[in-house]
Length: 153
Image (cartoon, rainbow, N blue to C red; front, side, top):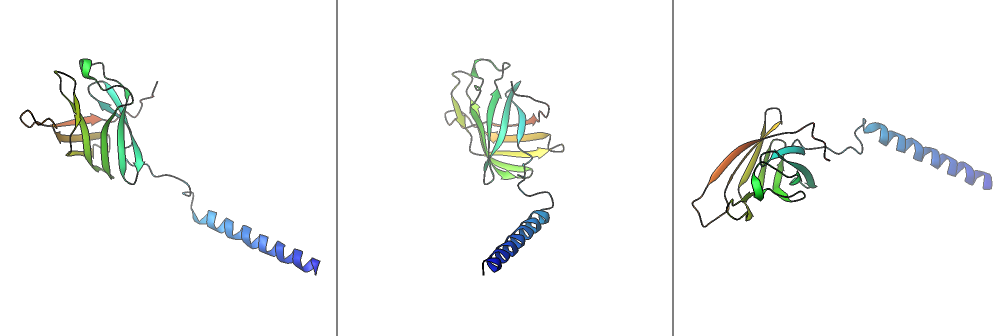
């Protein structure tokens, strides 16, 4: 009886291993890989500043400053500050981008930002309307180049 029990366990273990191998083989080399959306990466921001756009999951993305701009003066967003909040996929995203008032550096988010990737996903075309309600509405569009060779310090 003991001999039969060992054989049954060995047979079950062999079936388990074969099943595991079949599952791994069916992945085709893609198991465990995470798909990166084209918006993710390093992008120009506020002159010579750099933002990194990362996924927050479920189609949500955030752009945070990794290098503060030295070309726009005292109102540059500091390192670590979130300046872009988007939702989307592929080449189209919508959400919020941060504007600032030059006179006093007050910052607010727009609510109508649209980002479309162009030029082989190497340019982010960003358009939005200024969020400040005490002045005439201002709309702005700008092209943000991808920085594929940027290395954070």
